[in-house]
Amino acid sequence: MPKQVITIISGLLALLMTISGINLMSSIGIAVALFFTLRVIDGMGQRIPIIDLMTAIASLQWIVGPFIDYHNQSYHYKYHMYVDENVYMSFIVPAIIAFGIGTSIFKDHSGLEEMGQRVNKLLEDYPKLPYIFIIGGLIIPYLSVFIPSSLGFAFFLLSNTKYIGVIYLLFSGKPNRWLIFWAMMGFTAIISIAAGMFHDLLLWAMLSFTFVARELHLSFVKKLATALIGVTLAITIQSVKGQYREMVWEKGYSGNKVALFLGLATQQWQNGSIVTPTSDVNMNARLNQGWIISAIMKNVPERTPFAGGSTITNGIQSSFLPRIIAPNKSKAGGRENFRKYTGLEIGDNTSMGISIVGESYANFGVYGGIIFMFSWGVFIAWFWKKLFNWSNKYPTLLIWSPILFLQVVKAETEFAVVLNHLIKASVLVFGLLWIIKKQWGIRI
Image 1 (cartoon, helix red, strand yellow):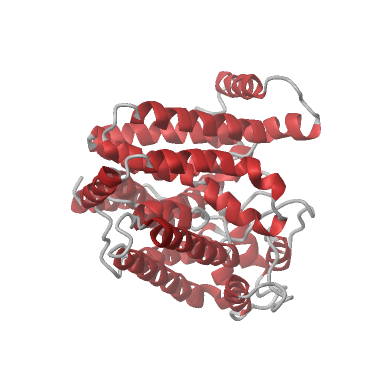
Image 2 (cartoon, helix red, strand yellow; image 1 turned 90 degrees about the vertical axis):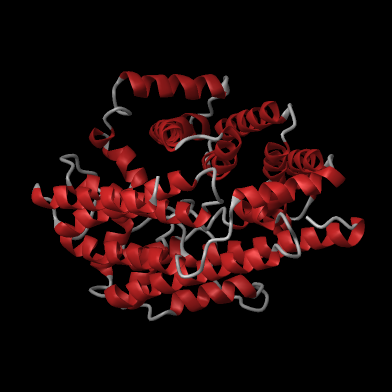
């Protein structure tokens, strides 16, 4: 679908919503969310749309979720919007637009046709390479019991090489590629259900779809239909996740966990909460990151002063310096910033980030926050451009980009976690590719 058509459709939606009496900024915001969502769907199969995915996920969690909450009769005692709709949307919509503009500063060089040629050239010389990555990624988690906890993050990232191997296979045209791909997705689903943690399944399903769409030559309509199915599955997981974790983690359920999960999902479909998600305030709370952002907007600067860039500085410090040198750097989990800037309490074992856009407001206010989001978008675009430049040395480097952006694409994660992941994952991936080149002469 041409970009101009997507723009026209989004503009017409904004106009119709405004005419119908919907708040102007909310109307613009929903149109922006539609634009970003259609753009990422359209890009599937043509490029690696990681940056487009970032803007789409952010617009859904920062705009659509809050919009549903503002226009929903149900009320949650904690997970609700804390400021007026116009106040919230007047900040968040320009902030997301500014971020989107920033990410578009540099030209996107991630076409899958050229990438396919590079992969096939690599596999002509090293046909077993995908299988090595797949087997290595499957084995690594079982080695984690023998390594110190300080290396846990590195081993977690290395375990994701199994997905990189599968992506290589998708490009290869080998007859067993689809069997291995679906087996890997099925394995990930079972592991996710067993652990009660679904991030890996959802993220890799989204990140790998662009390669699937290329191989199957999917039209826009088919990609849209697949995306709707994916959204339905994600909503199903979100609706079941809380009850499932309670039964497994707290009540010690020891039976067949896959059967338990499927049974709970069936119940959710039968009682109608999935087909009418606006009636389920708890489920929308999982989509709606805006309740945290709005709590920050209510609390800062009325009760807590603006941070003035301190959390950003601390995030940069945390990403580049080890704790032995910087003992006061941020701890994982986001609890410290959440409590301070929202004014709300969470349990000591609960991880909840204030998001980059929430952090931008907590530091710089409305206008400064919008400028920061633009700057963050420019940085992301610059980093992507650098990856493309470095791919002259490592021809298939961009295929490894999902590992680099695993935390970056998530809309709920705060600055320190995002930058820390991006820097450390980059060091690990480049180090691995350098070792492979140095030891075996393979330019991946």
